[in-house]
Length: 247
Figure 1 (cartoon, helix red, strand yellow):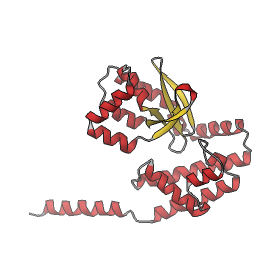
Figure 2 (figure 1 turned 90 degrees about the vertical axis):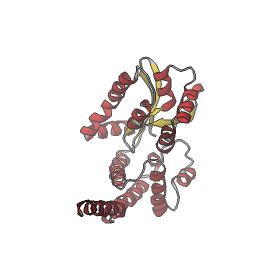
Figure 3 (figure 1 turned 30 degrees about the vertical axis):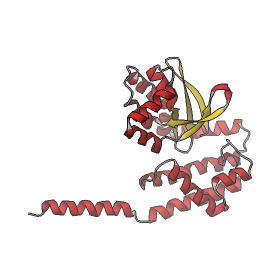
Figure 4 (figure 1 turned 180 degrees about the horizontal axis):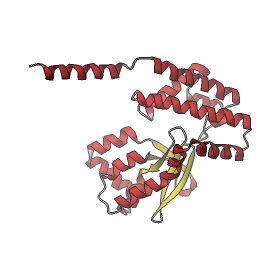
C-alpha cells in the first residue's frame, strides 16, 4: 500500500490505505464495523460475525488481506482490510441504519479516484507532483510512470485469466522478480534494507526498466497462451446445450 490516511464518516475515524497497483482504497474492516454498529468492542463483534456466518468467514479469509495501518500509539500494525466491493459485501451482514449513508460515503470517497480513472492525465499529474516532492529526478519519474502502466496492463490480463488478487498476485510477481533479478520481492527488499517502503519506489532507473521489460513480456506471453479453463468451460456449455436439444 502506497498511501494511508484517516477518513471521517459522521466524525468517526476510519483508517484507509490507497493501493497504487490496484488503484483502489482499502478500509479497515474493524473500523467500519465499529462505525456501523457503535459496538464498544468492534473486534469482538467482527469475530462473532465471522463465527456465526461461515460464508462471511470464508469470504473475509479469502479476499481481505492484512494491511499495515496506523494503530494506537502511532505505530503501524497489520489489520484486516477490504476494498469498496468487499466492504459492501460485509455490510450485508451488519443490520445497521447507517448502511445506506455509509454506501453513499464510500462512493464519495472514491469519486476523486473515479475521476482519475475517467481522465488518466489526473492520475499522472498527481503521481508526478508526489514524486517531485519526494526529490526524484524527472528521468526516474518517467520510467516509474511507464512502469505503472505496464503493471496495470499485466494485472488486467491476470484479472481476465481469473487470477485472484492477494496471494496469487504475490506468487506470480515473485516468479517475475526471480526471472530477472534472481530474488523474490521479499528477498529484494531485504537486500535493499527496506521494511515498509515500496520496493519499486526504491529501484534505480535501470532496475525499473528491467522489471518493466519482464512484466511486459509476461503480459504478451499470457495473451498468446490459450486460456485452457475458458475453453473447458465453453466445451462444457456446448455439451450441455447439445444434450438439452437432444429429443
